[in-house]
Structures are given as structure tokens and as C-alpha cells.
Image (tube, rainbow, N blue to C red; front, side, top):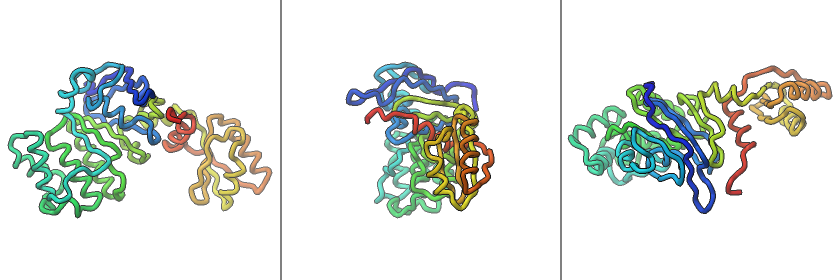
Length: 309
């Protein structure tokens, strides 16, 4: 990653209907970095991304994106951005090649035929160029959408929950391509609910109802949560989960088959509760484990207050 900052903003605020959808958010993203935004539905992830790239004008705050002022130079920013929305938004009655040719005309690109051809080959779409977009599977639609977003060679790529509804192989191929783009210097902002996708980002930020609660690498975010975690392997996982709910030190209980994943911010209290529950019977062994990003996600979500409630 390049040390140059692609995005440097402070105090971004945006309100709709008298409520702050984004509330005093500051973000720095380096050139060539993949920055992930996590958070519950309605947490302001998409609005934050749109503020960062000039698609929305903030009510307050300041900063730059790609060297341009986010308050006054939105149009200049937008010309250097590729934006892939969650919903497939291309013409289903046109072929892949026709869709890309249309996008090339919209952006008024030079050498349109050559750009379309190079983009088809880069994304592995050459053999399907004459297939109607409406007949593509979710993974191939995703690949077409990405092709359309990068054909004009943007410096910043925005991905709004880009892999919803596609199979694991397509998701992995997609992320391999994203890392190649970042390696070439493209900066990527991505909102996602998938923990494995968040772990493929260079850095992540957790947003909850307009506020940024934490930011850093995945390891930094997990360590910063201060969680202690234990696992219990028992056929009575569901019954034990009910017994542990609400007891001292227990913040999270999640079953995974016969394995119970138990986390809390007070490690000593949690260990004492588990020892007491094991002594009460039926007996079980509990083993110290590492907290996961999903544990932190659920903990932060439980601690947050919905600003629209």
C-alpha cells in the first residue's frame, strides 16, 4: 500500500428528517488500501461511503478525497470513482458486451472498443460477451457489474455489499480480483455483513447508527474489544446456553452445533460463572479460546442504540 492518503476527512455529519444518519465520523484511507465498513442495517455505512466520495454533500465536517474537497468538488471526485451497488443495475436485455459499450459511451471514453475488449478479458467475460445479462447467474452478474465499474480506470472503487447472493467460489474469485486492483493502486471502500469478507480488508471500521465505534486492522479491533472467550463441547449446548444467559460475566452465548461459544468483557467473572455452572451439573469442560470478529460485531451491536428507535 502507498503511504499517500486517498481519503482524509473529519467530523462528517449528515441528517435526514432531523436525525443524524452519520454523526461526526472521521476516516483516513491510504492509497491502495481496502477499507471495510461493518455495522447493522441502518447504521449509516452506505451514507458514509457516499459522503466520502462526493455522491452526497455533508451537513458538517471537512476533508479531501483523491485530493479534492468533499464539500466543494464532488463532481471532480465522482469522475474518478467506480460505484458498484448491491442491486444489479444494468440492462438485462442487452448482452455483456453491449452493456459495457453503453457504459463506455456514458463516460465518453476514448478507444471505447479497445477498453471494452480489455475489460472483457480482464474479468474473464470474453467467452460470454454475447450472453444476455438477464440470463447470467448471480456470480456472473457481479463480475459484469465490477467490469463496468472499473472500465474507466477509477482511482477509488466503492462496493456496497457486493457479494450478496453469490456462491462462495464466486465470492472468493471476486475478492482475488479486488486485491489485484488494490495492488495496482486502486483504493477500495466496501460495506459488508460477511465476517470472512471483512477479514480480507486491510482495515475495517465498525459503524453503529451513525457513529464510528472502532477502527483498525481485524486483529486490532478484536484485541481492542477486550473480550474473553471460552468454548464448551457438550450435547446439551442449547440447555446450557439458556442457563448461562444473563449470568455474571456472560455477554455473548452462541451455539455452533454441539459447541457453545461464550464471551464476556470480564474474564474473571466469566470463568467463575462457567466453573459454577459446571459444578451445578451436568458437568462440562470449558476451554479458553480466541474471540472472533463476529463476537466483536455482536457485542458492539448489542451495546448500540438505534437512533431511529
